[in-house]
Length: 432
Image (spheres, rainbow, N blue to C red):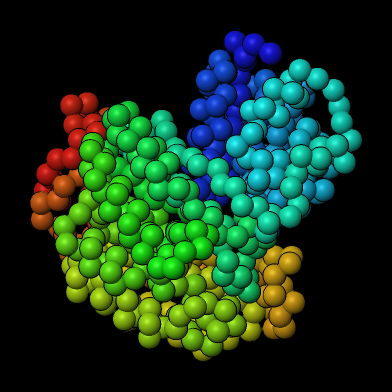
């Protein structure tokens, strides 16, 4: 197959890790002469990189696949990602789906696409799932990836999978055990991004603080810090961020090193999930509110007024009004983060929480989400106000909208200014 003049459309749903992987897939297509078009346009082949964190995610995947099929009924549609891993038979039955690719084969999608375009034949649902790997927990390989296209920032995958088995989460079932990208590959990719003009890298993974566990050597808990130090020395990259890290894995030696003067910014995304110890215990989280609060206080002591984005799940089975208010008060009075990422609990087949009693009604979840969204708006505004009148370093991004450009401070405050092409991709001091 000569890929000349052919087009590929890739739809990415869900996390930044999916985004990085989709970019790597797109790069492979482009190497073979394909032009990338938007997912809502006519294309010769479609790729859907799915998410399955909630039932709503699954529904969005199904709707997107059906729309693509209507755009070009002759085009093969390849579905990969967490939804396809968890429910391959269900996905294979969606009209238009040509192949279901398991996580283990994600890096070989172009090869499968090439075969589909050559054959141009219909297949049965069983045949469509033939290249799906069901035993994800035995997967030892990892698909290195990084995002591209935005010259100022890139998401670099350094880890995949999780060994934690929280009672609400399907991630271990969808992505397998914790696996690490070898440090030499991550460093090589960071250098390639620097050569391409990227100034900021966001490290991403499923359980990024668990980096190195799969190497099965003593002292693995130092591996992540060693990786950070190696990346910090890459010339051309001026900023790093850690996308999301468990509070128990954000160790004091990492905090102390970042605070000593590095390219890593005072911005952390840390999942809390609940501010109530009894709920955390039912979730099988590996910390309590005391430890969480102490970790936040330690970071603030060492790094100053840090931007904290906090994940929260509301309506977990059995969550009473009193337990929810413990979470609300813990956030509003004790932690006071800069932003909340709020999710209503969604039952997922195969998890312990799915069969727990006292499932919370949807209307109660909706009301609790609304309360926390209002709190998040207040917390975010309070955080921004503390920096009014101060001078901050901004990395401006290339996108232009309405004659404006935008960028972020090191501590993740978004700033808008009049568009100036000379400032794109540069870190400049601006008075807020």
